[in-house]
Image (cartoon, rainbow, N blue to C red; front, top):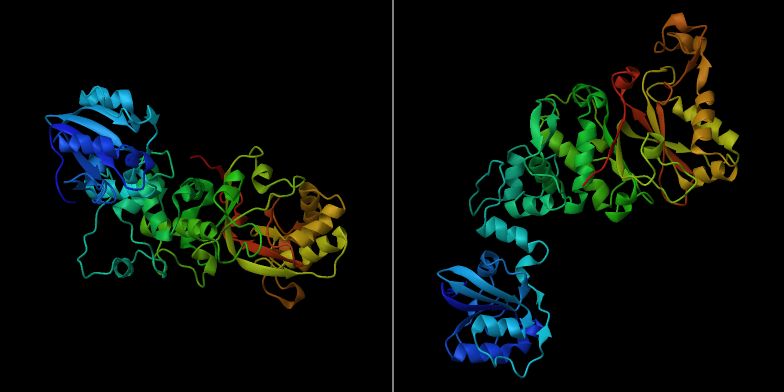
Length: 481
């Protein structure tokens, strides 16, 4: 920044690319020649070319401190305080502020200005971080000019093993612009250390994960769902099992933020899918202390513990979305958190009737956890478009598919008890005479997703804590801004 703005007199803020600023150049020249005005340029101190002594404000510090929203803006300052302001070109306002009755006789009466550079997207947050009071309460970590912030995050254990985006004040403020909630609002206490997590800390981890500000409501709702007691996040972390949070998003917000529910929906390549799930995992790690090898005791884990998040395909109006099935009103934005393992591929390219496909799905679903373990865990079935089309052509709704699968997933207890079929694993011998369900009622969640081509669906086994169905359940929460 070169030059200073005075504490008394007239000041005009302009930028070279603004047509209205170019329009008022004769007025600015007249005032400058009379020594009555200081012109401040946001982008090019050689503009206006006919005015000498233009203040260089390409750093936008003066524009920020003067709260300029559009250019040209004319201010009158008295003892450093603003006493009058005109935005854009309004001939009578400029005459009143300057006291010159014939000012701008040759110009139109009115012309709107252009947006100021200091209020462009992403710029305001950087200026607050640089020149203002950010209001952020989290501890700041200083680093030297030769330090690599990304490497510092690795060294301090803030990453999931992949590089993270360093959370600068400007990036945090930009992320917070994605929600109307106060930065100091406590979302909840994150296990295992039960540390309070504010909206600001959510934003910090969302920055690190690579989120965009518009993802913040989804990240916040996912965290709220994860902190519901019946999601049993602490138990999920401490378990030696494979599982981690799986996030399914329903409602218009999924399309609005560009989530993927189609081709490769469970895979890589979509920023929203990848970073929303990652943000939740980083919160668990960085706020709650859920670190692998520490409280996270998974024997093997699964790649979904980096991130596992996708949107449901709601393109078919005949299909009841998962969120609606779980009690939300149609059209409401919602997340469902499921305690899930990795993907078990289901391939059936020959079944052509819903009855055949139901039996085929049931045979694979019985493998969840172990073919002889029943009422032990839950599962999620991700039904691809081609498989769903077989059910839809026969008029089967979600409820019909669920009911038929439930019936197909009942087997005689004598085939499932310890030692049966020469396999030690199984259910208690006292149930040998029972007909036994694979899942508790409601323990199989069905979601539609995937590309149009391919008779492939996916089964996500649930956490073994699901056997305590009154204590551990999937959770659905409304997304709010």
